Length: 361
Image (tube, rainbow, N blue to C red; front, side, top):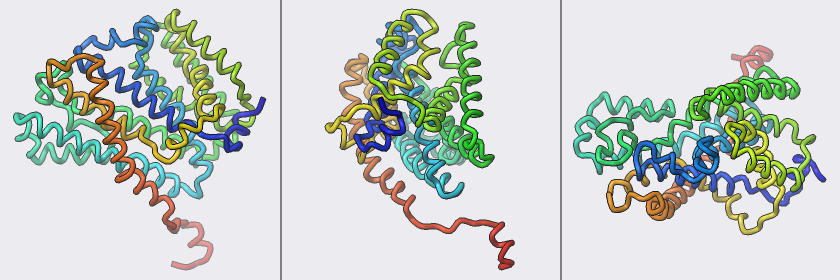
């Protein structure tokens, strides 16, 4: 039985992009219920019913997104040559496609909501749009006038709210790295355990998963710990199976499914990501459609929901998925991939200490 580190370096394959695409599709599936049925529609979502109200598919997917990010972003920091190099990689990954999705969502609103066009043409709204692009928010895309006849009004792109939280986690990694905390992985392990205990305490008190501030941080830190301790984490199909069974059992006992998901769900994700050789998923290692799918799905699903005859979660999914995947493919090849290629452009890091040592201006 090898370690996670051995699996990563073995070259057998990396399925994380495929997993993230599946998670993005799970978010679409979860959104299809409220977008088609209206408020309370999420109560009829499959996983929400199976877990007795503990968690919907979309929530589970976003949580595991943060787990995978904690794993990969920690690796990115440790491989980066400098703070500037790290931040540049993170900005190039997040911002370009996000900005395009905001502009795309705004275009959808312009085409579908004539009553909102005067406001969109105002200087105030344009400033709000620019702020959204800069600060990774979606305030310009929220208004009672947007999709006024849809079951869920006001939201042009209800998926964007997690992106600033993702970027905040990136900055957390930078701060930890700046203070050399990664050299003390036991300290990060202790911090992670404390956050998980805090998170579990609130779940046991009856708090909703959706509104816990420690939720995303818990999953991100568990992913971080998995990378830092990858040489000590055994990778076994039996452990993965045991974790999966544990999640199945806990799904019947609230709130234990949500409590176990960061660790048990994280391990299953690691096994599926690195422990299985899947040649048919090799294309996902060069074509990552997950981010584009996540960014563009909501406005497409809102467009489908505009037609009363199509207001069924299953019809919404059948129509929305191929359109969204097409947009994700365009986003990857025309936006994301091209900006990510800029990471390889050589640059000179500014080091004030070096200038002072040489005495040169």
